[in-house]
Amino acid sequence: MAWNKLIAPCMAVVFALLPLSCKISVGMNGSAIDYTIYHTVHVSDFPIRAALVYPPLQPMFETALLDYIDKNTRLQTTDGPSDLQLEGEITGYSLSPQAVTENAYASQTRLTITVRVKYIDNKEEVMVDQTFSAYHDFPATEMLTDVQDQLCDEICKELVELIFNATLGDW
Image 1 (cartoon, rainbow, N blue to C red):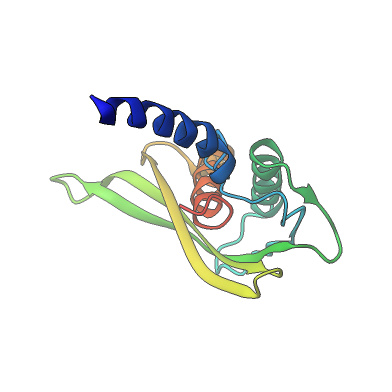
Image 2 (cartoon, one colour):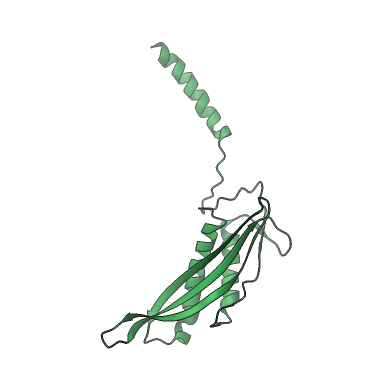
């Protein structure tokens, strides 16, 4: 009986102090950025270094990456020195046959895009160099030129999510 009288006030004190002692930095979008330390991010150009080049891919990818960062963080993008940096290159843009039929013809074609990314944390002096790849299949009866923009857009969105989660999302 005496313990009950002691436990209730102690628990009230613990629950009252708990919000003061904890600091949660994960936002609703999955970002784990401490905005008291990080304020700016610089996203460099991502030139195409692949053997097969689709010129609209570079601005499409860069725009998707910048838009995703703008929508999912409070970081300010800068052209100069920054707290965080993302730089890299598009290293792969390839087509490969998939789902071969009994006649030895491919019924599906796979478009794969590969991006090499360097993530630099200038505050903690940390650099991570990682390669990301994503693909989408399309029917071999369709011409690449007819579906290329849509496929590149979908693949870029997937790549951006992978890159964000591995760098700024800190999963």
